[in-house]
Image (cartoon, rainbow, N blue to C red; front, side, top):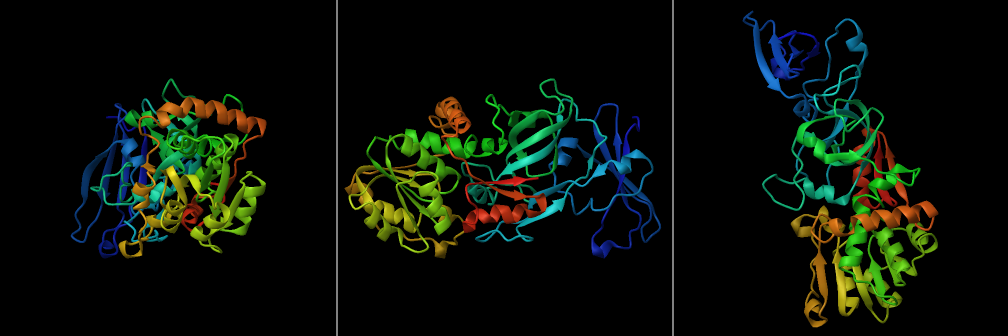
Length: 431
């Protein structure tokens, strides 16, 4: 073993163990490029010295929440101390009851500091995050690990993961060079080391038309855009002259579905939560009509705006919106269940009781939920979605609105804005 790279960190001990002084973690890089951490406690109350090894892989360490232990760094001479950079992440601390609480369920913490002088891991890359996507489905991942769903549960005491755009800082992989922009499933963390199987979760950000705002690849050209595109055509089967109702119409998915529907010659009605958003979907996106659900009940609004009924319901909200849509559906109508955001943070006693589901049978409705990763959705429509929507954005015939939260310290507030309707368009974090 050679001690070619050695860094020492101060260890913050629990309050009841403050009799232990001078404890440190020593990192030794071996010739095999593995990492050996030794916890060294030079003096206990008994006066004895203790040293024992703790083995970690570097990639595991990067994805482990360790802020409780790596708050302070021992002073070491030379360049290494000067090159250390704070590395913060949004961490999942406990399973929320209802809406997540900042500082309790979700926290912003300093994980292992990033050493700007360190090389990339063997066969991997070091990344600096630029943008992260915020999506309502992330709430569903804040659950016990044993409960199965379409997306894996977030791990307690680890950073939250989602689609991110990042820049390659260092590379030991032939596919990536410093300066490359990548996109993929990453922890919401400022600096990330990626190697091994985790490399399958990232790829180059392909921007053949040179779109200036790369944030669109997290929205209209990202997962939410593909979600909207694939489900609208696969389940909606739109026909010119039909009427579609879209709940959460100013959001990332709803605003895209509305514009697609207008291109197909449909009459488009949207529900939003403010007069400003209502003005936007009508004046900017070209919706034919809409309403502010905080001022008018959905059932009353649909009777007023669609007296002859609706053919397609694109459901993003659920609850009272879904009940109203079912009541307004024409025979053989299609209900595309994309999301139920009104229910995500509701406790069992707060969930909206749906009483008119018998209309599904009586009106021979098609009601279908989906996940964009299902066969026949994302895989079927990906190439078409990218080719068409990139061209529309480039020529200015497709409008994209992005709501940006700036700074990792504000990340929790940015995520929670999704569930209060404060965001306008696609929600992203700028690191």
